[in-house]
Image: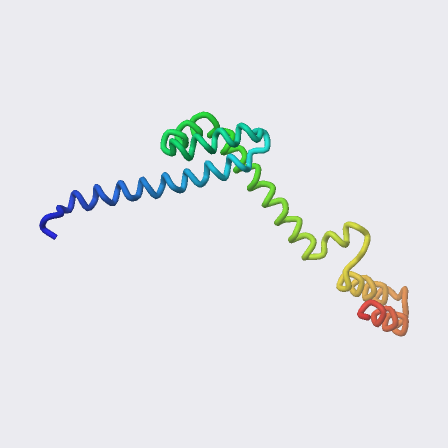
Length: 135
């Protein structure tokens, strides 16, 4: 323990942290290369070869040259994911069915109960319609 000073431990930890951060950035760049629809096949191959053969320089140049587009693609993907999630919630909650004109069983039963309360249908008609909805 005496032959490895505390400052060297911190220095080693810093370099290890920077190396891990660079690995994350490398994977992010490679993912972005394949995700970009505006970039052609040869462009993707060129950037990928550049990032693999000269990894530090390739990642640095890619982030400088295409970093703004990479951020825009991240924002676009997040918005699309949020929209798909909201659509899923609407479909699951049943509000989409009401908007299309088809009511869920709960909505149909509530409508029938309102009609019965207003006197538009009798108790017997309510029970028949309720049985039909629940079937």
